[in-house]
Length: 96
Image 1 (tube, one colour):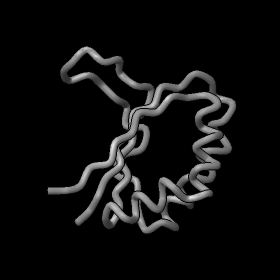
Image 2: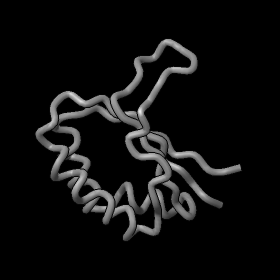
Image 3: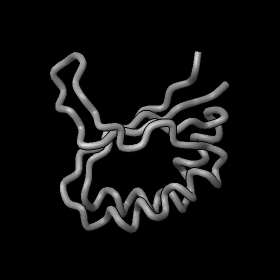
Image 4: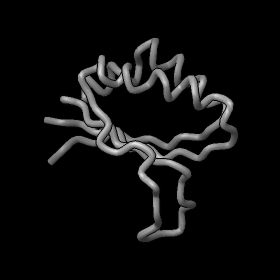
């Protein structure tokens, strides 16, 4: 059963972005997953939460692949870089 990571990102500075976005697509592909949405041009449909600067959805073959990706050394290194200039809210959900 597919699993999806859904993320909402607020960008505070752009210093990290070139390096991060030059590396993350290859890392995603090497973990047997793919971006379904990247950037996403977020717009509010309902609710009061702030609209993020960017959003993404990554599809994984299953939750085990998503967990392996999120806990991998390579991703943690890139995540630390991303955190230097952004805040991310991410959730993992399975398909129905």
